[in-house]
Length: 147
Ligand SMILES: [Cu+2]
Image 1 (cartoon, rainbow, N blue to C red):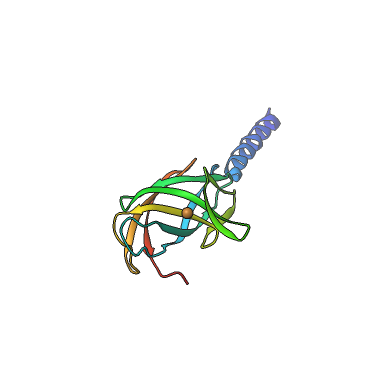
Image 2 (image 1 turned 90 degrees about the vertical axis):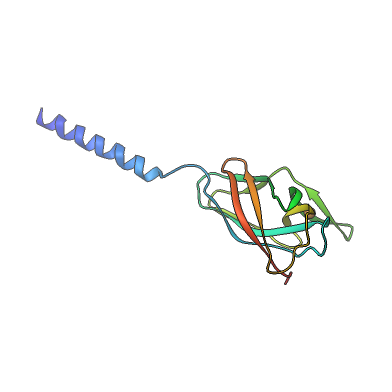
């Protein structure tokens, strides 16, 4: 009787420990160092760069976005084809579990199609990013000269 009571307590303690150890599941995406290239005039296209960090134990994907400052927001990849730089609209950019992805000039970027007004260094613009699992994320992006 006494012995089985102790076994029951040990069993319950083990269960609650393993529940804690697993931690929260799913992606935990954050955005670091978001900035935009200047755009000299309204109607032009802009590009936003950032680092996407996923602290969670599940991958997520950046699938698109929107901004009141532009007609459309798309996820793009820059590629070189026979010495010619091209951009491609991609359906999703994967941010691996416990990993990160850099969006930088010459690589991935968030394209602003048709900005409503010129973007000058020092300006900020609001943008909403859409993630497959994490949903919407709003951020303020600072306009900077390309280094
Ligand atoms: Cu682009």
